[in-house]
Length: 513
Image 1 (cartoon, rainbow, N blue to C red):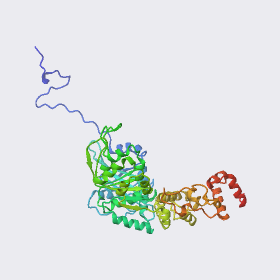
Image 2: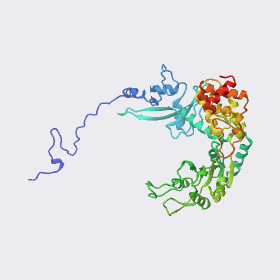
Image 3: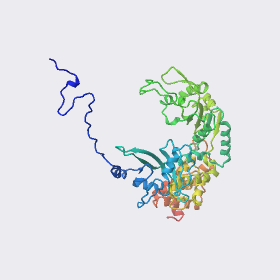
Image 4: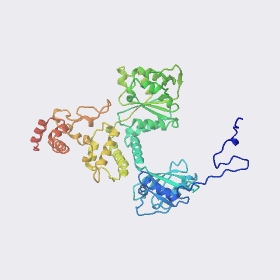
């Protein structure tokens, strides 16, 4: 007789009870609670001491249960302090700030005993940003994230608060913004007139050509035009034509389909489509390949183009702003740039003056950079000493505002106390006066002698006129070179741009040997 295969008829292991109606299998005993809350926190303690985040654990009411060393450091707590609540951490009601951030109708932040606290960028109830530090302290910015951790076996939950000091990140961001906005900081009449012109033409749809030396702030001016235009809500897409190989620039701008060329494993939209509805900024347009200029011209005329490898026409709505670090007209005259494209992109040509033509802005910009750089570093640099200011005013600034920013940062770092002195500035600036020591020859001799600044825009008399060849000036130049080279005459001669025998003769004649 065949064996029944129904589950109820199968052989049961010893001690087992067959499933019958109304019978409940014997329940296994529940496991013992694995860890208590205190034990869990003790397990966390050695781990939290090794990470670079500030971590605090609290109960539901805000009572502080655990605080790692990094949290103490961020909040300025002494190692002997044992705070009992998130309501009072060195005078800061952290839990109150977290709860206030969770309420969309929360009032603006009010000063605490420990300084000011301002929430910003709060996307939800668990994230905010605090600014700590009173009037007598440097401000610090703290990112705060808060959430809950469920404990096992229905023990409730813990509030976890994570702190990260983002002061350095804020500082770097502010410096970059400061450097960009410095292009708009001026008292110079030329620049004021240019900014006024930008305010006038920005609302139009006309193409704009910005011409000026590298470092004069053309990108920032292009962004200003976009921000004041009807397209401000659209994208601002920047492309540096000189940084893209000629063989790839067509694909970069107009996109390509999959398989259009070797290595095109997937389709690419291109920058024109990315800028649709906004502004496309083509920097260093003077480097744009001549063979692609007809395609660029067609886009400007019709708003249409085909991606590389495609026969499908794409339409875009883009305003074009271009920039060049050398005059385009000579390129047109020599057949290196299409005349019809030039007229199309230069509907509104704007010339950005170099910094050497804005002498009144050098001190203004330098003080602006000092203010931005010295405070976050804690250096407290009050400004420029007279000797360093004279050097800055005499220097031709071939790198323009960008070079001035770097020079000031160099000075802030090297200043050992008090104002920035001449010896705190970069050597190129300190040695500028000594580059034409052999002025009797009628031409500048030495580092940078005979080189023009500004890629064809004219250098101005300050950039190329040799200094006075008097004995006093020559003596000062030689002494400065010897000081910078720590008495090494070979290096001093290299700094001055002369050979060692010439330097030796000058030193003997001036009584320096």
